[in-house]
Amino acid sequence: MTQDVSQQISTRFSRLLIGLDATRQDALEDKDVELPDFLDQDRDGRQLLRIEKQAQRDKKLNERYYQNFLEKLQTQLNDEVRIRLAEQLQDTEHLYSKLIGVPAQLPEVLDIMSVKAASIGRIEPLVATIPWLVNDLIKMVNMPKYRRTDKQGKVIPVESLRMALSFLGLENLKLVIPSLVFRRWLPQITDPYPNIKVRLWEHAMGSAQSCKKIAEINGQDTQAAFTLGMFHEVGMIAITRLYFRLFEEVRRDALTEAHQAKMKEEHSALSDVVPSGMALQELIEQHASRISYVLLETMGFRRLMLAPAMQEVVESAPVKDMNPLAKVLMQGRGYNQYRMLKDARLINIDEAKLFLRSLVMPAGALSALKDTDLRHLNLTFDEN
Image (cartoon, rainbow, N blue to C red; front, side, top):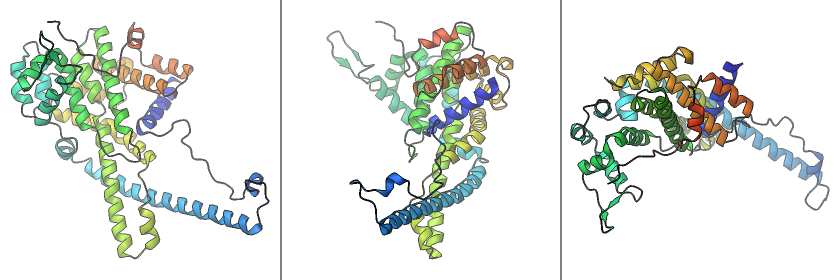
């Protein structure tokens, strides 16, 4: 029973991330094109003439035919997308360096920050090799929320990487750098599901914060927990980016073929065919977790043992039998799923109880997480 609820919650949550309505996803079938009695009258109550009734029926039939035609074309395009996507998933180097674009020095930066001998001086030259990260860090510390002022109240501008790193400090950078990196990875064009990137960000941040809090309660490495919580859906980002790119590629090819074959109806309809949220969900459920593991393993961390933990999640080991970091990911990710579904009113009390019980949360975790802000970094600074 608990396993059934967990699977239902997982499926419902993936629909929420994409933007599908989990409670009303099944389309209503148009089983009968006959007009109901109340549609046999116009707004003034006048009985419609037979020819008007026939015109409405014809219009309804034409609309139904065209919709079925679009769905058939969409299915054909998605079948080809699946083939091409499966081929591209075999090229790990392309996924890592091109599609996601993992900075070469990122794993070393995060590894160095995890040791006691870490210092701003050690990570500065490595961060400096990632120009966009340098810009984002400087931009961040100059935001009104973080900027500092002198004794006269005048803003102190931060103009160099060293100043930005020193201003944030190592403990904050353990949170800031993974967050900025993940935000950089987010897909940008996901029409007609524009909220995917927003919900993916909310999911990553909420999972990372939940994992960090649970690690604190357990006396575990909070940096490893936060980073794994932030990066564990990098595979979903890869699948999402690939799907939308390949769908457009396949549609362009289909348009070219239809034009050359003088298939006017198909050529016209292809312009109205849109990516399928259900097809994307299927691909995510099939590939995302494994690709997350592959990408984390490719990062080659020497101190942050993220890949072995992700591997246990991919293999669906029982939570109680997982190693500590993998267990934290399952618990933190699961708790954030519950919170997001609750906010969207897509989980009831009985389901929530069963689902949270299946996570085998440590004592005191649920009460601590209830009071935790899962949407913001909540950085801490020394008072000077």
